[in-house]
Structures are given as structure tokens and as C-alpha cells.
Length: 503
Ligand SMILES: Cc1cc2nc3c(=O)[nH]c(=O)nc-3n(C[C@H](O)[C@H](O)[C@H](O)COP(=O)(O)OP(=O)(O)OC[C@H]3O[C@@H](n4cnc5c(N)ncnc54)[C@H](O)[C@@H]3O)c2cc1C
Image 1 (tube, rainbow, N blue to C red):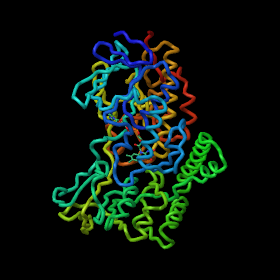
Image 2 (image 1 turned 90 degrees about the horizontal axis):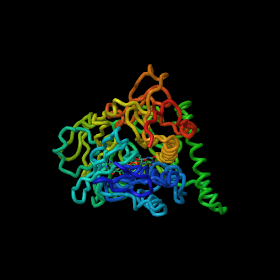
Image 3 (image 1 turned 135 degrees about the vertical axis):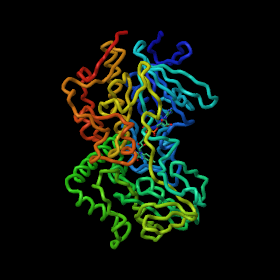
């Protein structure tokens, strides 16, 4: 198969060839395309996206009030200033991403409506062969590429996680998972029950509370909330005195990352003090005599799961105004009129919204094979959560949960482009990570350390995820503050990188 590396995709036989194939047009895929264009302008590329539009997470979720829970100064890319309030709606994030696509001529390279069905690596050709279905007409199409940049996220966009609750079919009202919410659903003057207590529940509850008759939140266990005004005083001040937007973006990002670092360390060193401070912030919105027991006193250590951000204290305002009732209990079964809790109480509702999270999807659920052998990701060991032993020429962008996901998109953008340029420099067609001699006796463990960070969808899917070692190179430690020094100083000549093949 003859291929060349000019900045255009080429038809090779019946396949379309590119140097780099990016999977997914979410915030990771678009950011990765930007970095590739900037840092490897000679490489041809394409983005395959199964949906009809870009945005990923921000396109999928349409529930009332859908918004970020990170600030957009850090959830936005480092190269494109964010000029709005820190917490942004899905629409605002989509507009921002649309501008990135437009300003950088990326749109032309995105193939929408292409669902990837299989990826096969051939060591004879040093190529990935990627089979996709064109959803418009059902045609199967083949792309080949030298390098696969996996930006398909971490959860199933089509099948949300719904626990197997008894008697769900008995319920006569409307049952919907937040991920499948249809904006046409009318909830005004209805009794809405939200099952769950994480970031999604924190987002929908204040939105429902505006017009619903009443909102009840049924949670198995409480969550930590961080209440704050939706504004950044430093950004506002810098704007007022005439500082340019790129400088504001850079400075405010640095400020936020510094503050988050301090908070993370304090959460570990003095979790009880931090919790008292979080309570004080809540009292600013809910009143001095707001009762925290039993619904707002979590069982886990602060920061073991994402802190649910609560802009302008909206959840607590709804609670203080009597529009929200919280029930902390298990769900025993559904009834005709609602649900029955473990302690026997029946909660009646016209609409029940499951905010019960995601179904993990490793590599978009796409079957992979390497030289004809099907690949089980659980048999691989991950290199910094992005490359995998035994899997050549592939990187997965898995961002941060405690810091903005996109910080890692930019960081891995630099990494991948550095690696591709290094491969060109040493005339390599193939790169793979491998355990070094000093790693041979390393303990091989599940993807995450349960005591460090343990959201349900990851714990449920540990047997599908690659595994980790107990050294910094062989895990995704979810720690931006150590990685921001370690990843940019990667030595591509290190013995964990194995290169093969001249041109
Ligand atoms: C409601 C919600 C709010 C969130 N808020 C934040 C936040 O505020 N801050 C934060 O840091 N993180 C947040 N997250 C985490 C969030 O998912 C990431 O931050 C980020 O948006 C993920 O981007 P991504 O591009 O990697 O993946 P996704 O957004 O999941 O996009 C992946 C894309 O790949 C496509 N794809 C998947 N499989 C295939 C296939 N087989 N073929 C073709 N295309 C495929 C999908 O259609 C999708 O468009 C949130 C998550 C959710 C669900």
C-alpha cells in the first residue's frame, strides 16, 4: 500500500488514507485537531464522528439547565480565550467550540455520521485500518491511518446507566434518564422526582424548581457542594482596566489552577476544616440555620469524588424556598405513582428523572484487533492513561476529573505532536510502550486506586479498563499538578518507548 504524508487525505484502493485519524468531535477531538495542525502541519488527518454535529458531551445532554461544572477559563483551551462568566451553558460551550472549528479551518476534516465499527492494526503495513458505517446510507467505509488519536470520551452516549430497579414498568408517569432528556418535555406545574445527587442532579434541580410544582431529590448518599457566585473577580477587574483577552485568559487560568491546587492539598490535609468552609458558603445562600444533617453530610472524604459546583447557591436557594425536598434513602421499588424507599415511604411524582450517571465505554465500545488477535484492554498496562502495552500507534485522551478535562487535551496535544515529530526524526513507523526491565516485577493493579478517586461508573467498569502499575509512568494519576511538569519533559528516547520500522 503506497501512501504519502501530505496534508490531504488520499484514496488508497478503496480506503481513504490519512496520517492521523482522530476519533470523536468532542472537546478532545477538536482540541487535538488544532494541536496537530499547529505542530505537525505536514500531517494529513481526518476526524470521524458518529453524530451529525460536533460537541460530544455538550451535544448529547439536553436536560434543563445543562452547563459545565468547571470554569471555562480552564475548561476552555489554552489557545482560545474565554470571555464569558466562568460557568457556561452547553450552548455557550458549543458556540465556543464552533468558533475554534471555524477559525482554524477544522470543519472540512470532520466526517460526521460515521460510526466506527472496528479498528485493526497490521504490523506488516504499520497501519490501522478503521471500518466505519456511514449512518446516512448504511455504507461501510474504510479509512487507514498511521496513528489513531482516540478522543471518543469515556461513556456510552446512547445508553445511560439505569440501575435495575424492581417494578419500573409499574410506574404510570414519565420516566426518563437525564442523558436522554427531550427538551420538549413539559415539567411546569408537575411534581418532579430526581434520583441521584451528583453534578447532574445539582444542575437539573434548580432548573426544574423554577416552574415545577415541587422537586424531590432522592439520594442514596449525600454529596459535597461548592457554592460560589458565577463570576471571576480577577477577570472582571483585568477587563475593566483594559487588559487584552489573551492575557486575561492566561492569568485567570493560572489563578484558578493555583487556587485548585491549594484546595486539593487542603482537602487531603484538613478535610474537616474544608467541609466547615463549604458549609459556610452554603449558609450564604440558604441562611444561617440551614440544617446539614442528614442530607448534606457525605460519608466519603471531600474530593474522593467530584465536588458538585453550585453557581450562585442555586440548589440551596431552592431548598431554602421550600421548592426542594431531599430524601436520603435507598430506592426499594417503583410503584404506580412513584417510588417506594427502603424505609417504606412512597414518593409520588409525575416525572421521574434518573440522574444516575454513565455507563462506562472503553474506546467507544469499538472492537480492536492487533495483527488478527482481538484486543482485551484489560490485558494491557497503561502508560500515563494514554498509551497501552501491546497497542502500537495509538493514544487515548482521558482528561481530568478534579481539574478541567481540557487541561489534559492541550497537554496530550503537545505530547502526541512531540511523539509524531520524534518518530519522523528517527525514521520510525511504529511506536509502542513496553514495561522496562525495572518494571518487570511491578505490581499490576486496576486502572484506579479506589481510595483516591472512585466514581461509580469507573468502579463498575474496572474489568474493562486497562490496568496500571505502581509507578508514575504506568498510571493515570488524575493529578494535573504533577503531570504538568512530568509530561512535557517526557524523553521520547526513554526505554519505555519502543520504535520500529524505517520508511
Ligand atoms: C453532563 C456532563 C457535564 C460535564 N461537565 C464537565 C465539566 O464541567 N468539566 C470537566 O472537566 N468535565 C466535565 N464533564 C466530563 C466531560 O465528559 C469531559 O469534560 C469532556 O466533555 C469529554 O470530552 P471528549 O471530547 O473527550 O468526549 P465526549 O464529549 O464524550 O465526545 C466523544 C465524541 O466521540 C464520538 N464517538 C464515540 N464513539 C464513537 C464511534 N464509535 N464512532 C464515531 N464517533 C464516536 C461521540 O459521538 C462524541 O461526539 C462532563 C460530563 C458530562 C456528561
